Image (cartoon, rainbow, N blue to C red; front, side):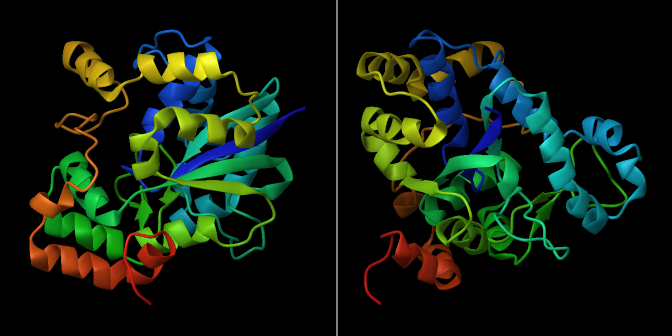
Length: 283
């Protein structure tokens, strides 16, 4: 049976770490090379590939507006599904929403399910600032921008199609709210505290049977210390930043990394969704 499972998250929320755990699990709990990920991870690249989209659509997407490209992305995703020999789990940073024409950006007709990773936006802001190599204030502003799109510049079009991130709140709420396909939501903080339980919980939602021995081995092989060491020795091909991709992965690092003003602004921007996820107390 063909179909797509989604590994969804706002950037800097643990998606790559989860993909590496899944990669190890698929290999029986074996070691992983961060620069030689599985075929499923390579398929994730196709869904945003401009050259693949051009071939599928028979047009040059560089001649289209970002809105026109977004409208055609469900067609590209159905083509990605058609290339798969069976169910495949794909990473996405897109929101889960209907496009103006009525189609879902991530089409429900080829979707089998998925998981969404969420992380305290105060920690996300610190990690995003490092990734973008920008001041924390700029990262906070990006996270608060309604309808934020990555790769939407008409003048500077790269090799990837536009990604509809939205603000942090828009993005997370789009995955929390009801939708035609089931989604399991897990907090990064819970995965960091007990990665074996988190992985075991998520596997059935991605179409995998659960083998406790393989789960334990996969978690051991993808410890963040191991991933950081690999990156230090060989780099990481997915990292487009001048800074290291794999950071400390700290939980609550915002307490010392943000000023009170910065933390308060994030809570004002995203308080309603933060409360839904247990990151803030009170109504």
